[in-house]
Image 1 (cartoon, rainbow, N blue to C red):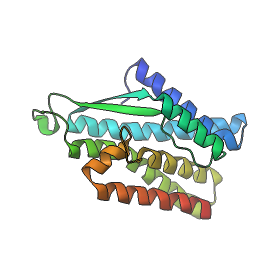
Image 2: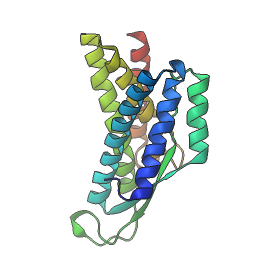
Image 3: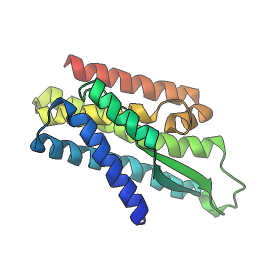
Amino acid sequence: MISGKEEWRNFLISVLVVATAFTVQNINPGFFVLCFIIVFLSFFAHEVAHEKLSDLEGIESKSQLSSIGIVLTLATGILSQGLAVLAIPLLTKMRATETGRWLRKTEGINDVELGLVSTSGPIVNLTIGTVFIALYYFLGIWTFWLVSLINFWIGLSNLIPVHPFDGGNTVLWGGWLWFTSTLLGIIGIIGAFII
């Protein structure tokens, strides 16, 4: 999981930045708190997915804030009035540990391991987005739509196909997986606005 004071600080700052970017469309304390909770839980699920696969693959990861990512997150929130936010304030650095899967000795990180770990977070967010857009469709609860929108944007943002984003590593491992995941996210976003 997220360990250490510095990683928790970076995590909370990134949640604050993304929640702020989504609340540009509706500046009031109640909406901000709702967005903060959704972003917190969504980012947490994203990071847990990375962490679990990192442990399995023998990869050590550390998250750090990106000043350019913070600016882009806030700028996209302002320009889109909180409807299309590139949620990229936090970057993850990875390195191999001495042992990997099945406790085998590792020489470094290969594209498959890097791709698996990197893709896990966005896939979790896209799955959450899909489940909640379906719940919104059947139940009509607006909060479900917001959960879906935020998760689709977190997933898509992390699939940008350049380093140091998760998508850069996903493309190295399997372009088909990047294309399928990105297509799912785009369809989800379009679906969220059509419904």
